[in-house]
Length: 329
Ligand code: NAP
Image (cartoon, rainbow, N blue to C red):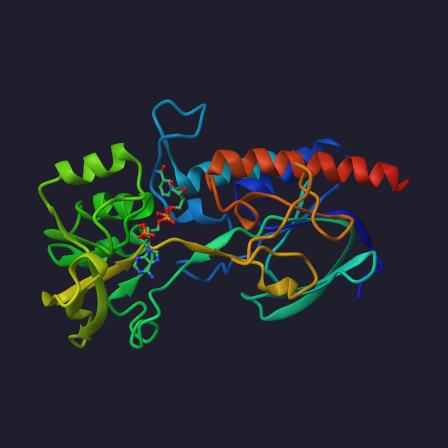
């Protein structure tokens, strides 16, 4: 184990983590950013959720829009320019019981482990896609079931795909998938949407998109390669209804029902809300452990935007800098 103790370590390389890195680096704190994700994966890349999106139209400064991965590349370059050191891998153990804090990092590409020690820690680990929890769902992942239209949409050229969910992600995925699929059916458990009006309108205006509202997916039928059919059941407003939706041959199911915070690695060391998001205090990024700060989707279950995450990353870096100064570090 190296004796080096970093002033600040940042966990996560999405908009929150990389903005924290830019601010910490410009404050001469020589931050180390543990990127997270899995470079070999398709759905959990370092760089956070924007790595899985296409066009980002609402990030200020890009009037023509920008591709999510390109935006994250620019964040990263800016953090690098001011001296951020990047560590590939994800934190698999964290000891916050004593300072300096110790993080055990697993490099998934090389299958090696290393330790990072730090005086201050900024947690920007974000959130990951949720699943429906159906028995066959996990075994069919990558075989017809996916959470990422950008990654897998092209496999469903001229096929029928289903998107489940009623939020902005579901609308965005459905619209994106119309580039490939001949039909996109949105299955949503209610009649009203959590998604913004503009996104719902765009989806409703698209002739390739069909709707199954007040319906839940209760089963799916593989056809060897991908999916043949899915089984729908009526929800509260339409109980008792049962329907088989034929989507084969080689149909797909895109699960877009929201995200859960990536806070498991901390166990009970940090105070969490009931839904697993990290608690922060007094309008700052301070957590229940002194010297640990949280920013981005890991604490924000309300706004969850790239721009709010970036703002939170800035706050966390300033909070960490002031705290280190108070400690004489
Ligand atoms: P979300 O807003 O939480 O929506 C999740 C949707 O999935 C809801 O419609 C929910 O239904 C449904 N759902 C949840 N659990 C389910 C289950 N077990 N079975 C069936 N349906 C289920 O999540 P999101 O769409 O991922 O969006 C997250 C945040 O990112 C939001 O703030 C959103 O505005 C933002 N976002 C923005 C953009 C954009 O601006 N372009 C794009 C993507 C995301 P109920 O409504 O019935 O709860």
